[in-house]
Length: 170
Image (tube, rainbow, N blue to C red):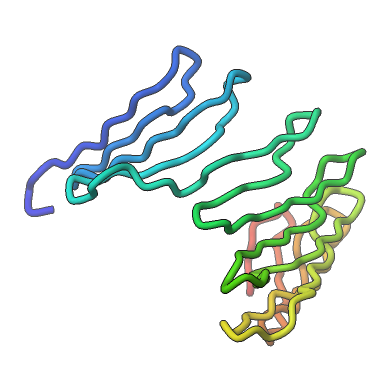
């Protein structure tokens, strides 16, 4: 940018886990770890802020160490469902409370093929007073598990690959 150098700075644990970041423009990201050294919360700070602002207030993990819930500021949250055998993500539900009632933001179910690729995303959410972007989609793969067909956001797309597996057409 105009011959000037802008450097980001990072503070890490001995194991390499990021604890703090700072952009060239002064925005700080603050990452708190739990006693198990997993990410527990995230806050931001900027020179014009009166104090640190929480973004993620708590991260909840199951006994296998898989993220199950993200609790954001002001009562918003995301719950993540996982297949207990494969640990693949199977559902996402996000909501917040508005004037005493729960307002869903997203409610999706995800199905996978035997190779772990997404076959179907089903958006279970209806139109809300805040609007809605339908995220339902279906995906097909060839014998090499390369995406060859998708239907999502009103588009029906086909994909081609060379014999060596290089993407050639969308």
